[in-house]
Amino acid sequence: MSKKLTLANRINITLALVAVFFLVLGTNRIDNLHFDTVQNALSTVHNDRVIAQDYLYKMNNLVHKKKIYYLKETNSAEIIALNKELEVLITVFSETELTTKERKNFRSLKQNFEALKTSEEKYFQQAANTTASKIPTSFSAGIEYLQGDLNNLALIQVSESKNIIGLAQKSLDANKLISNVEIWFLLLIGVAVQFFIFYRTKKSSKASK
Image (cartoon, rainbow, N blue to C red):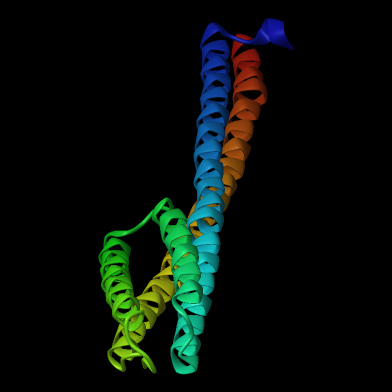
């Protein structure tokens, strides 16, 4: 059969096979790109959203403990211990990937925390020289500011997680579409190759008789 193939047919078949090769190569690179996109999305959701949400949850618990300690008129040692835990969590949270909106709210959180901590330090210094001291009610406003910042940051985690998952899903959908197109294109190439091998060869053999 191969001896009956004309030079033109062989060239056409070669071009078809080369097209198949580049198609497979191209789709493989696109598949890898989509795979990297999905992998990065999963990594980002875990490292910068799930873990960040855990930090926020722990910070919110500590701020709530502060509020309870104020009501109990606790001593400075307990408040200082809570502040140290908060400082650690604020530091590790700052190491996650932050959006522009996140940075704005996080900056507000740090400023409000430092302001409250400064007020606490001044209060406990003054309270050490007096008796029957009472926690200032102004501290409640500082707690509310911190809780507001933490709630805003928590909402951002949910929103960003949805955006990232949506991006990953779009990448998967695009990959599925390309795979379907690749299958149909390969079938088309296969039909074309069969056409060149059998129809053109048969036609040329009849013409030669």
